[in-house]
Image 1 (spheres, helix red, strand yellow):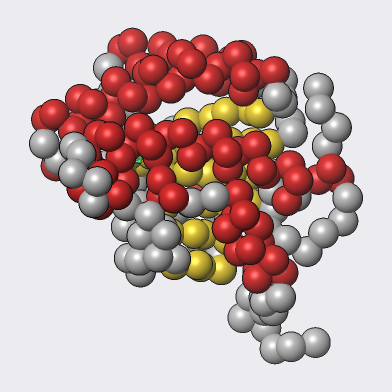
Image 2 (spheres, helix red, strand yellow; image 1 turned 180 degrees about the horizontal axis):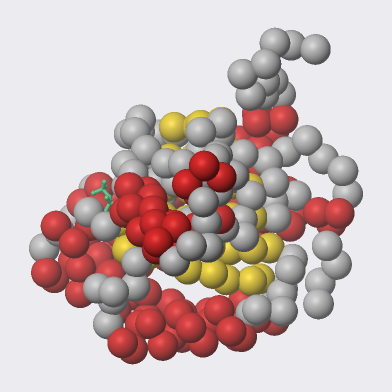
Length: 243
Ligand code: FPP
């Protein structure tokens, strides 16, 4: 397994989350169908994952498909689902060999059985890895995640495993899809839109944000490095006053 430079002290973000936006516009600017942009976007994922160890990024979370993305045309949705399958089949070996642990967050109920099987296999085959933790948000929505978490929590209360008076800020995160992950330090959104679109709503309460104009298929490791450096110069106070 490759060495882990992230054990060195550094002041960059440990957990980076990315809203990979702009694939459609990137394709349209080239007179190509939107799916062409998604394929180009998928190729960017590898470059970004590979850059993580060198930048001290231990956790990378990417927004691949939202609970709202089902509103797109049937052609685009089907094309994205087939892209996810092809991507998993193509990348499983490389990810496993390169020390990347992959997890999926989001609701699996609407996903097809073959895709779920591939997701399970990828999670299983990379379960021993620890160099970079890559989390793919697929059929993910922050509100949906909180609603599903609340349902599980309510079941525990109903079953007598949890007392309502014991519920506090530490309780709900234990029921979220992200329960084993730290909160993101830095959330990046590409393509010039300045909104969070239902991504990691609970977890990003104190994240730093970067909204950049680059369309996702043009995003590079060099740009990620620049954003990590800029993060290092920010003072994060979490509501407190400067020391
Ligand atoms: C947003 O761009 C992008 C998506 C909804 C899909 C993101 C998917 C990928 C980058 C593909 C690969 C991912 C993995 C994990 C293999 P948009 O279509 O909203 O672009 P637009 O705003 O220009 O229309």
